[in-house]
Image 1 (cartoon, rainbow, N blue to C red):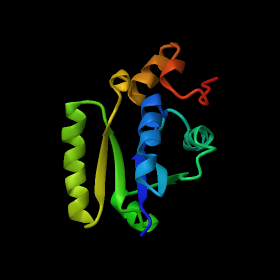
Image 2: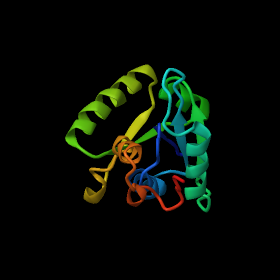
Image 3: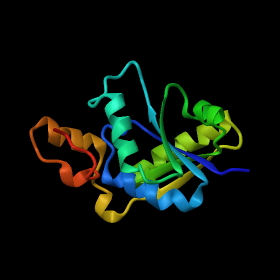
Length: 153
């Protein structure tokens, strides 16, 4: 059976921490789908199509990776994609507590879904999409926190 993983998130924007988690996870999967969740009730900072294009550009030379978008519950999306694994990155103990609860609920909703946690590198721990957006909103240079393929201009 093919090992298909889903790396879900809003990725608004995709950071070097996200990139690190993806690259380090590749030996674990036959295929990894970076899945950008879409919530019609929320307005993203960057358009969904832009985020998708950036991520596709970052991993253009990686045949195991595809980039997709979805709405609804991640576990239902996993079922549609025949994925048994959800990949999550952990920066802090608070991330672990939050992600643990979600992983346990996901497993109750759909048996056979496993969540795999990878710890971020210490130098990536303070980096989040929320903080990058705040830097940008206030005219700062956030380029050191995102992959080089992302150009904010």
